[in-house]
Every structure is written in structure tokens, then in C-alpha cells.
Image (cartoon, rainbow, N blue to C red; front, side):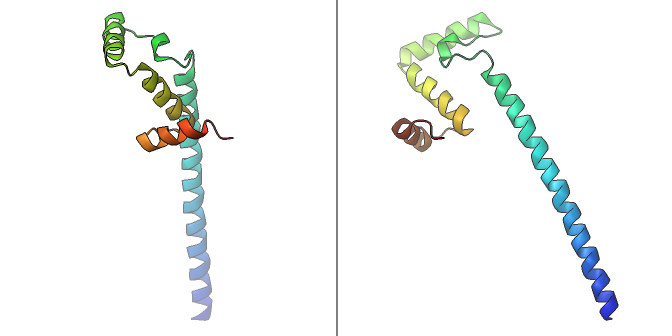
Length: 104
């Protein structure tokens, strides 16, 4: 019984280590993909929604007209900046970001 218990414990540890390794690799690959997507999104972005491109020019014109009419263009630029830095954008996070700026 003691020997059986020892091997069962070793097997359990090996399985647990194997699962942890698989999960760590999955996390690493997901982080790499997230970085690549973020780099792609930032490519050519000037920091201003006004400078963004669109595959359908009429869509950009409509969006920009609505933004100008709402007076929220600066808030959109700020929300995008928060999203790029933090990876998420909520009203409270935007307030904190406005108060502190980018923390390094």
C-alpha cells in the first residue's frame, strides 16, 4: 500500500505538471497573438480617429460627420488611447487615465 501510494502521488504530480505546462504554453501563444494584433492595430495610427482609414470612404465620412455633430471626437481619441495602453477601456479607467497619464 505504501509503494502504491507513492506511485499514485508521482503520477498525480506528473499529470499536474503536464497540464500546467500545456496551460502555460497556451497562455504564451495567446499573449503573442494579442501582441501581434495590437501591433497591427497600431500600425499607421496617428493617435487621432480623424486620421483613420476606411475600406469604404462613405463609411468614414458618415462616422466622422456623426462624431463632429456629437462633439465627442476628443473623447473617442482618448478612449482609443486608453484601450491601446490598458487593453480595455471603461469610463472609470478613462477617468483614471486622464488624471494620471501613462504609468510606466
